[in-house]
Image (cartoon, rainbow, N blue to C red; front, side):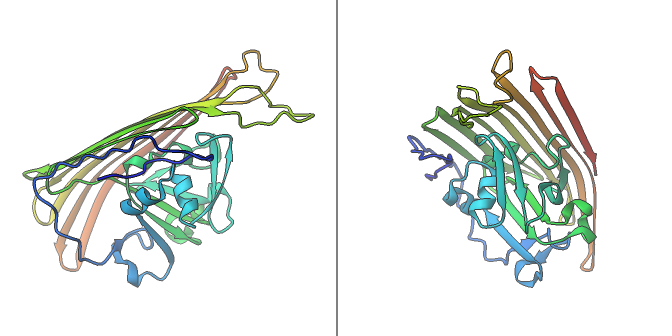
Length: 316
């Protein structure tokens, strides 16, 4: 299966894109209606949702060849964005005109935020590890709280498949871009797993201009490096009970131009985003379903050589 896996702000050509799928047998086509959870925090058919909700599938992600989650949402017509520099620069996302701190980001149900930029780290969410995105546009504060005035973006990472499967993606392009991602999914008895990892790097370009009075212009290129990994482990204890553990870890090292008076003229921003969730779902009867979950997300943002550090922790 061949797929484009990246794009950049400039003209980018893909030199290599490889995907390898190993499966014991092909899965049957999904004939069920699309079910979403973001609109009401409970399973609901998309056709019955009254809110303005958009679902972006894995096939949509591969067709758009977006470089990041923010680029994917913009290309899908769901949001607008502003970015401080290149693809790895600090990114702000706007739904329905609301500011970035009023757009809630959930990763597998875990609330993710960063006090460093006043909103989630949209530039540090791995596109290669996303299975589906649900975008709820419009106020949802009654369900999710005050940080959902503009809307909610819920990301679902890759899930297990009925048969063992391996996906591999490799890409290269101008601006020194190199990409590699891999995923392994499958099932063994009552246990299922979905493991994925991605590496992403670029030499970048100079995002500032040499104009009179410019404070931050530095004559260099600003690249970035990303290391990302996710794990989703589940146990189908019975037809009515399921336990699941989800873990995500992303590391970003990006260069930026802080000031032309900086002694080294080589400023770096380091951002680590983590999310973890343990849940137990039970179907007691046709009319009664419960879910117990505990989750935590952490975001650490640091700039060097300038001494600026913030740490954000949210518990669910």
